[in-house]
Image (cartoon, rainbow, N blue to C red):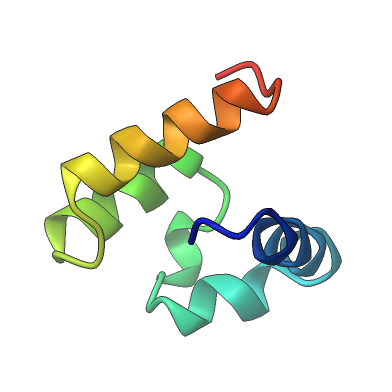
Length: 67
């Protein structure tokens, strides 16, 4: 997802209804309160690669997010 508008829309969706977004990615409810567990779940299940995760972190940091 390289489009900043798409990222902003997704952030707004996550703020408004986090479980709705998380369930779309198959995140179990018991992981919903721990971001590290969610990321690990996505990595373990091959839904995202380590490179995708690293690129997302770099992009977020370039936008001023403290990660």
